[in-house]
Image (tube, rainbow, N blue to C red):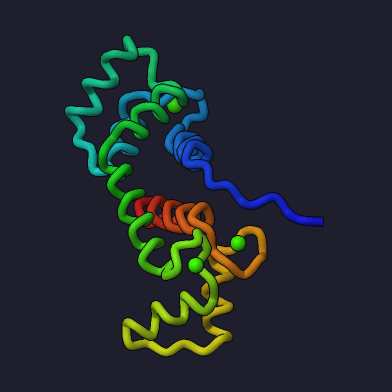
Length: 151
Ligand SMILES: [Ca+2]
Ligand SMILES: [Ca+2]
Ligand SMILES: [Ca+2]
C-alpha cells in the first residue's frame, strides 16, 4: 500500500496562527490581537490599523487574515528563499532531497556527517517516512520553525 504524499498547506499553517493570535477565542481578531501577530511578520502597527478599519470594527476574520498575510510580500520572499535553499540541496533537480544529496550539501560546507546524523536530520522533515525530503516537507518544517521562532 502506498502512502499519500505529504502536501504542505500554507493555509493550514495560517489557520493555526490565527487560532493562536485569537487569544480570547471569539473567532475574530480585535485590533490588539491583530497588531500583535502582524508585528511578528514585521508589519507596522499603522498598516495594521488601516486594514483593521476596513473591517468596520467588527474584527478581522480568519479569511481576511489569511488573505492579508498571503498578500504580504514578507512571507512570499521567505517562501522564495526556502525554495531556493531546497533547490540548491536537490542537486539533480528531481524534486527530492535524498540522504546522499543532503550529505553532499553538508560536505560542501566543510562538514562531514555520519549516515546516522543524516538519517536523524531527514527525520525532522520526512512526513511520509520515505527517507527523502520533498519541497512540501521542506517548506512545512521551515515555515513552522519560522513561526515558532517568532512566538
Ligand atoms: Ca479575538
Ligand atoms: Ca534529488
Ligand atoms: Ca518524505
